Length: 194
Image 1 (cartoon, rainbow, N blue to C red):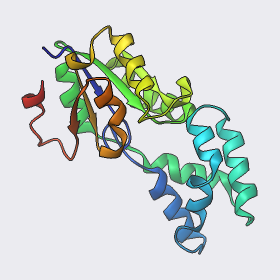
Image 2: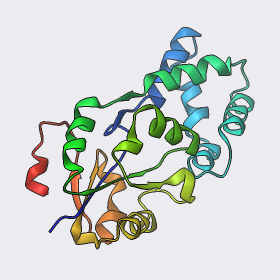
Image 3: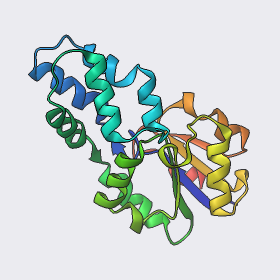
Image 4: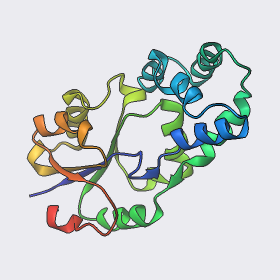
């Protein structure tokens, strides 16, 4: 019997805004497509940021130093922040699950970004379990982050479902015995897995 349902955040609970925000900045400042993204995402400090090992301020300072061109960090931050959009239809569906299941989030997210989502999108009213890389200093697909969520929910792997849009991030969930749903859209039949 399923007792807990866990969700990824990016491209599940929110429309992923990181790449889009950077792309908009590149277009607005005539930067070749992907050049700034490489500094923002493909450098080791991105992983450090998502693991909570450096602050948001330090992360963006490292991006600016690595990119070696003048960057208006305030505009870049604003572009990224505004490009994240909550998946309201899915969140409303998840609210309907609250009376029956323990609900949680398992996500690779920088602490500061997740904290904004938690507050601004009302996630604190829906979810009781948070397993977030920026707080725990571990990232999916490591099995430990899934085990942390299971321990917080006080359920066994087979008693839970994990919903993610990326099949390359679920190996740890599978190792923990969690049932998997790969999210494409709300029209999927979640009820078949609950």
